[in-house]
Amino acid sequence: MAVVVVGMVPNPRGQAALQHGLREARQRAARLVVVNTSRGDALVDEEFLQGDALRRLHEELAASGVPFEVRQPVHGRDVAEELAAVVTETAAELLVIGVRRRTPVGKLLMGSAAQRILLEVDCPILAVKSAPPSS
Figure 1 (cartoon, rainbow, N blue to C red):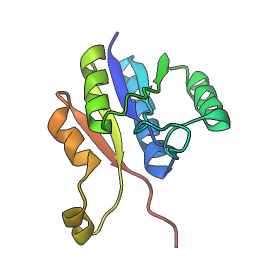
Figure 2: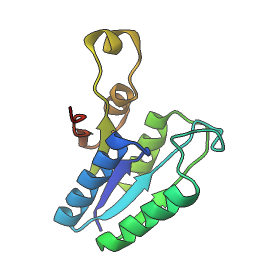
Figure 3: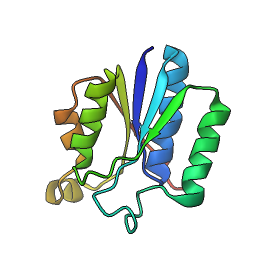
């Protein structure tokens, strides 16, 4: 069975990635592998799903009808390395990530996880943005 991997964080860009990943998995009749990783200290990492948030994710995925797996590795590896490892292990045909809107100066001054992912992952990547905030 084909595999679509989604990098998930609990924010609007992560939700956008999840929704696009679900759509791609349905279209490809693929299994969805959702990766939510921590930088090593899951108890204080706000991007690491726990408790009710993790339960809601499982419920949403179960209701979708798409075969899925949620992985929460806590190796202390960089997110790009972790996603690359999962893509390789599952022989994924697509990786879906959410990207944040940044100013040109912000892009210049700060390293980008998305850029590292683009350089390290060896499969097609769909980078999606969340909907712009309403005025």
